[in-house]
Length: 183
Image (cartoon, rainbow, N blue to C red; front, top):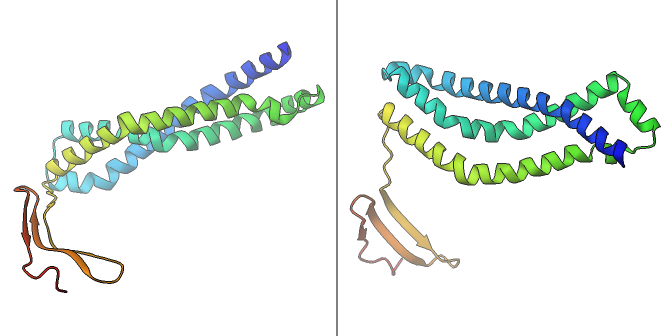
């Protein structure tokens, strides 16, 4: 039992640095992709560099959310491949430890990362992505109209349940059709 715990610690000591490097690089790559995809629009609208950096900063949690699964997979594959290339896996298997038991610590890390990712998305990613989108829209002078026209809700048999000519979100005002139930 003691040698298995030593092997788990060794595997994690090989895995975690590679995971940190991989997630850092993938997050940096995603930030660059987001920046370069919007760079022309930022330059055309003369957006200040501080605003661009703030928009990018709000995108970091979403980048972490995107990069985590890919980084876990990459780090696990690289770590196991590195151990195989050094013939360390052969030694482990020769000692009678099955692969599923040897790699169980990586599965635990993956499970913990998925729980962490759930809470990260729920409490951090969604609010910061909203702030990023709002700041980006303000910086690029883009405004979203939440008002809508010609809204019709129909039943399965095709009968109109409700029909609206226009909904003004700002005033919270609905202009209804006069003959909404007769269509």
